[in-house]
Every structure is written in structure tokens, then in C-alpha cells.
Image 1 (cartoon, one colour):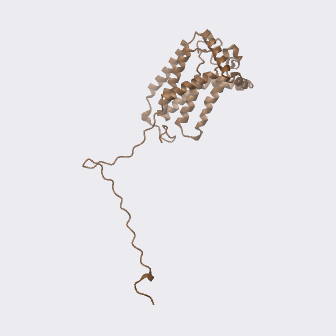
Image 2 (spheres, rainbow, N blue to C red):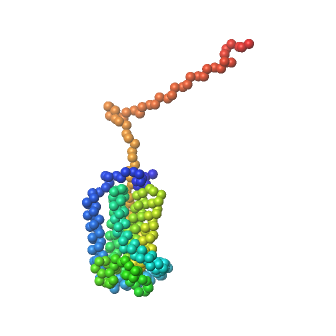
Length: 284
């Protein structure tokens, strides 16, 4: 009966909205910690390439579809591959920030839950980046894939991965591009009631095709982040809305509740008059 979500036409509960300044500092702080953590994972180039070979061999032994099949579809049209690179470079962070901002303003309770899930997912991903450095398939010669960002543009990575000071290119496992997109879709589906809300699933679907087609991630990167997200969902449940209790009767002077007023029953209708032929005198 209580699904834990608010109807779309209900006014947002301002009491559930945390202070804005505190939330801004928290989100920015988490982002800075994550970026510094990714930079700390740099310097494991040889290990990242060895792990890439292991992941590639595991996917082939597990009969997962080749990443090249998706990339070949994008490479049929230069405009299409350029759009895929643009989507990868520009949608990831803005879409997540807009998602959190809208929830903060319109669905505060869902915002707190979504922020916690995203923080837990990102923290787990950072730990995995440190424990399992991984070169993306675009850098693995055995994969035979094209680095579409460098060839067609735009790209967010430097031309020399081992000396890239802006981003850690050896942190492919797991894919936060895919994990965050799934959280955005799930969060909006849970927080809204419109029949079209299921279209938000297009965001993670397109993201999956983009990260694989541009050779920035393996299929396994998306599988692992999905497993981490499932654990986060199980550990961090969305709190249910408390049901509204019926109002109690006003207490009487003696301290007890007033008796429920009785509703008088309708008076019984008068008996119908006897028909003329039922009179005592016999008619002649």
C-alpha cells in the first residue's frame, strides 16, 4: 500500500530537504576525493595492461559479444561516431548533477537516498580502481579496436595515457559512466509517476552502447558496476512514507474520549392506508 514514493502532483516535503550549502560542500568534496583517488591509482601501467589481457581472455572464454561488433556499427558513419564521443565526454557529469538538483528541489527524500547510493557506488569503484588497474580496450592491441576519441574527437583523455595528468586512463573497471546512468534512470523512475518515466532507461542503454562502441570500456566493466549497484540498493533502502493515522476523538472533561455520537435512524414510514375495498362495511 505504501510504495515509498511520492505522487507527481504532491508538493515536495521541505522538512526532508537537507541544507543546500552543506549538500554542495558534500558533493564537491566527494568529487574532489574521487578525482584525487583516481590520480593516486596512476603509475601501474604494466599491471593495467596485464589485467586488460586477462579481462579480454575471460570475456572470450565466457562467450560475451565482442566489443568490436558495436564499434563497427558506429564506424559506418563518421557523424554517428562523433556523436558517440560527444555523448561520452559531455553527458556523464551534467546529467548526474541535473538529476541530483531536480531531486533536491522536487523530491528531497529521494535525493538523500540517491546521493547515498551514488556515494557508496563511487567509493566502491574507487577502491576497485586502486586494487585492479585496467587499461581500456582502446589501448589493448589484442582487441584491435579504434581509439575513436583520438581519431574522430572529441576526447577527454590525453594522447599519451601513461603521462596523462588530467585523468587516469587505467581505471576502466568498473564503469561509472554506466553505473551513474543506471542510478539516474532508476532514481527518476522511482521518484515520478508519469507513464513515460520508463523512457529514462534509454539513458543507460545509450551509455552502454557508447562506452563499448568507443572502446573506453569492456562489457565486464558494466557487469561489475551493476553488481556493485545492486549491493548498494540492497544495503541502502529508500525509506517508506509513514501512513497517515486517523484523527483521535477529542478527550472529554473526565479524561476519556467522547462517545461517538449516534446517528438517529430514520423514522419508520406510516403504514399505508387501507384500500377502499378493505373497509369493514360490505358494499352492496
